[in-house]
Structures are given as structure tokens and as C-alpha cells.
Length: 342
Ligand SMILES: [Zn+2]
Ligand SMILES: [Zn+2]
Image 1 (tube, rainbow, N blue to C red):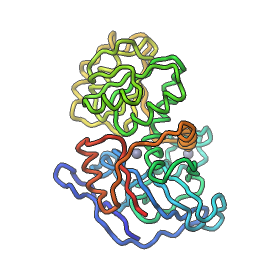
Image 2: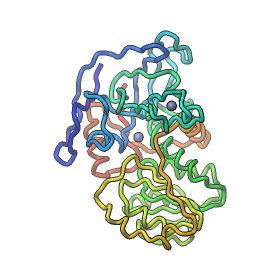
Image 3: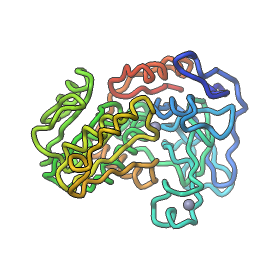
Image 4: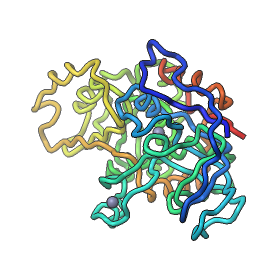
């Protein structure tokens, strides 16, 4: 099969073609696994973290990609959940132990044995992939394959962040950073909390305009003060300044949820400006979001189908994966990027 493969960790400022097109043997589904013929795979900021080693792959060469849509091409022994030809999706969670306290509670995203698609096992930048049938999701018919791909990471992890804010209807929600995840989550949030007001902080004028089109009542630059205090704020930036600036805009008891797998070191000194009285006092909280549990993916797909929420995306053929990644690296983002594979 054709696959775009990462052979080693590299620096994207010096190397604009980190992936190489290779011919790999077709994968064979093991017990309880399914073989998926991939049709679409979303491009995620996390791929940059894998390529540059901030969340390094555990094997090389590796096929990246964890927002995969395709059809079941073959069942391994004992796999019976899906029929051949059924449309399925795969997300960042590839597997977990199934036995530990976190797995039993439905927070398998926190399992010590958590394995990530496209990092610890081959993902969807290829014509085929295999995964346990228990970690695949039926795709609601309202979505095309390309529509569904961005929902599987930007949507699902965003949905988990929204869940972790504990927001209630009528409470104010903020977003700092407004990329692929933000544009999906604001729509999910507006559907789930119809009387809540949404505030968006973003550096780029284009992102702010886009947020207004999607229903934000107010938008401003990262460091601005929002006209009303926020009950919760979701941060999707890779840096620190938005954390410090965001905390000052929270209500007492407000919560900032960081939806980023790793933060960069470039502006870490911003943290020195964190003032206890202004930013943390009165029971303000900071919480991170780690990975996704299966429940998040399922619920996100259902909520999105109910709206229905069709992500805005830009299409690339598989062999142009490097171009798509470089555009993410250079922050040329409006909506999502999706590779069309078949
Ligand atoms: Zn992702
Ligand atoms: Zn576990």
C-alpha cells in the first residue's frame, strides 16, 4: 500500500519534507481487529509535535494520522462488530489496557497503557490501517468521509475540553486561540448551551472575523479584557501568554481548560507575570485535557450530526501531506486540512 511515512524526528524550520512516500506491505488484522480501507485522514497540529519530537513516536518508520475515515475491508478472527463495507472512524486513542481504574471508569484516555494512533501504531496517512474493533466508531450518515475526519480529533478533543469546563447554559464561555478545534467547539457549545455567550481571543484578524461569523458575541486580541467575566475559558494555543492573560478574565471559581498536548518553550517567561491575586485567587482553576476517551468521540459525532455540523476544510491528496503539514506549521489555518486517500 501507499503510505506517507516518518523515518526520524526532524526540525520543520529546516526540513519542509518530513514525510516520505513509501510502498509498505498491506497490514493484516489480528484477533478482534478490523482492516480499514482509508478514504480520508485529517491533518492535526499534533503531527508537528510527533515530527519534532515533543511527543515522539515509539517506533520508526511510522505512519502518522489519527482522524481516519474509511470502510471495513476485512475482519480479523473474532471481530464481529462491523460488516465488510461499514463506514468507520478512528481517533487519537488507539488502545488502552481495559483493566485499570481509569479504563473501568471510562477515562481510558488516562490509562498508563494508552496507545495513540499514528504515534504508537500506524495511522491513517496510508491506504490501509488496522485497529481493534472496540476502538472504531460508526460514522453518522449525514457526514461525508471528508466532513467526518476533523470531527475525530479537533472535534472530539474539543468536545472533551467543553465537557471538562463543567459549563452550564447561560454561563459565559471563552476561547483563546481559534484554530481547527475552536471553530468546531464553538458550534458544539452553541448547540449544547443555546443561552451562553461566547467570547473569542485570537491574534489574527481573520480568526476573529471567522469567530464572529460563527456566533461569538465579542472578539479581541489575546491580551484584551473581555467586556464580561467568563465562567470558563478553553485555551488551544501552543504557548503561555494566553494562559496568564486568560486567567484575569475569569469569574471567581472560573476554570481555564488547556487543550494542547504540549506547550512550546518560546514564551515561558510570561509565566513569571502570573500574579496570585489577579490570576488565581478566588478559586480559579487551571486544568489540562489529555487525549480522548471513546465516549468523547461517540458523543461528539452524535452532537455534530444533530446540528448538523459540517467542518470547513481544505483538501490535499495523500502525496501532498508535507504541504498540508507545513501550512499548519506556518499557521496558515482556516478550518481543518484533510487528506483524500481514496
Ligand atoms: Zn489531533
Ligand atoms: Zn487502563
